[in-house]
Every structure is written in structure tokens, then in C-alpha cells.
Length: 311
Image (cartoon, rainbow, N blue to C red):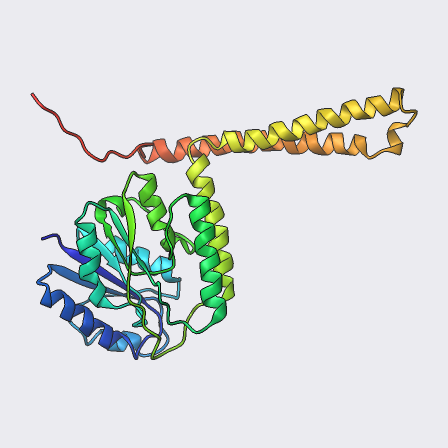
């Protein structure tokens, strides 16, 4: 049986952590799992840390300051030793009883099984509505069709996330990273409970961060290894517009009876030329940085799933 690493990022959840710990341990013992339970205290200012220090079995990690859910989850992944990583929210809205169902789906040959909170118990209209819009947008842009990217309850094989580095709000995009590496991704409906204690840390600014991170994800997906195509394309477009404005400027000068100073075309010629030239230079710099990143750290530009040989 593979070892499970159950990761729980928490921030000011003193009323929830003891009961959540008890439920997770109960599920794992009932199913005779080999597991480790890692709680990451994301700089809580209440008694969350004090409560966690009294619980066992438990690996307790406290961050020096509140760094956000993604950073806390990354800390848990870095310290996990299991073959399967299972993150779960610390607010008791995810149900640990769904863990066996995630693992059963993983046994069907998938690398990532994502939870879908089909019947959400959040009352805030802005949270549920904006979440649906964000999920549709992420699915369209990334090409990975999931109903609920925001659900923390997921199961990952270690292979698909061992080299993933997360920033911003990118923990929700791990299924996309897995797909890039050839992983198989699916989702199942999971139980969602209403919050009983504490306050939600969700805000509109978080949605904006997700959108900005999505732009980064799309850029990395298409241009991480050939960024000159993006910057060079923008540069070529601007240089083409500069040439077009130059030809129009000559046309108006010699056939349209208009002096250069009577139209904005000379300024546009210079503007488009400078932007185009700078874009191409940025593309070259980006290519140099990309090669430095891969070659200095011996990063491969491919991911091997399996090697076999016969004699």
C-alpha cells in the first residue's frame, strides 16, 4: 500500500483543527492506511498553533509569517515523504471521508483526482458565482476541463508534482501542470459542508490574483521554451505597423498634399519602430534567461514517464 501524505494548510482555525485531525485519523485507521499527517500553520495569530502542538500523530510546521495558502501547501509538499499527496482545507468544509473515494479513482490509472464541490454550502453569491466564472475561464484557457479548480481536496501521485514550484495562487493549477507532464487528470464529486467556526479568508482580490496567475500559466504553457516567438511576433507586428505608417506618410507628402507635420504619422513611425525593436530585444533576453535556467540547473525540457529495455 502506498504511503499517504495528507497536507492541511491552516490559518486562524483554532476551533476546527482538533476535530479535523480526529476525523482524518479515524478515516486513515479505519482503512489501515500508511500515512503521515502534516499541518502547516500559516502564521496564525490565534490559538491554532497551541492546539496543534497537543495533537498526535502529527507533523507540525509553522511558517514565520502569513504567506498564503499556496506557500503553505508548497511547504507541506516539500516536507512530505508519501507516494500520494492529499491536500485538504483546514476549515472543516472538505470531508475526510472522501479520501478513500479519491484513492479508489487514483487506482484506475489517474495521476490526479480533483474534488468537485458540486453542491457548495457557501452562502455568499459573489463566492459561488465568481468561482463558476473563474472555473469556466481556466478550463477554456488551459484546455484542462474541470468544474472546480478551487477545491483543495485532491489526490496526486508524487511523480506529477515532485518538480512543481508554486507561487501566488497557483496551487489550484496543479492539475494543469500535471497535464503538461503527460499526467491523466479526472475529478469526482465530493461532499462540501457549511463552515461552522471561524471566518472565510476569501475575498474579491483573491479572484484578481487567480486571473493574473492564469495569464502566467498560459504564458508558461506556450512560450516557456520559445519565448522569442511571443516577443518576436509582437516586435514584427510593430515593425510592420511602423513601415505602414512610413509609407502612408510618404503617400500624403507626395500625393496627398499634406506636410509631415500635419499628420501624427511621423510620431507613429518612431513609436512603432521603438516598441518593435525593444520587443525583439526582450525576446532575446528571455531566451538567454531560459537557457540559463535549464542549463545551470540541468533542467530537462522533457519529462520521462517510463523507460524499459529488453535483451
